[in-house]
Length: 142
Figure 1 (tube, one colour):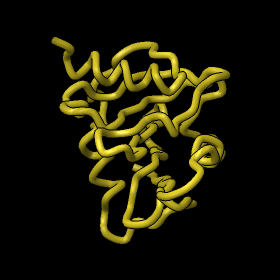
Figure 2: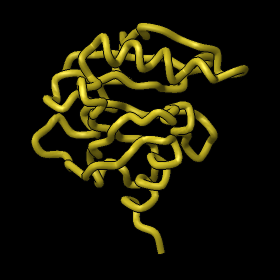
Figure 3: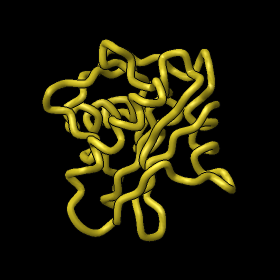
Figure 4: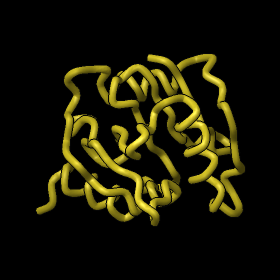
């Protein structure tokens, strides 16, 4: 039976990202802390796209903001979590961008794009979350 780690790796790899290693939740901030920050009262998106319609622009929109925020390293690496059962227990996974990467394939069991990328230093996050009518790209200092 696949574990939560197996399921998370499968989702990540299906998006075209390379998995380097599981970093876990130490040193922090943890996956849970990052999700709470993304869902915080008063959080506003740095960009948004409609939930319905063409999602091909999600990857580039997120990537532009993630690079601007210093979340994606010069070598294309960053830490990632996505919505998979028990993924918070797995913690952060170190991934690397590839030529075929497309974060719009990081969909949960409801068919919505939901993930957070974190800088290797842990001080910045940039993720995509599904809100009422839009996908929000959220970029925050932790």
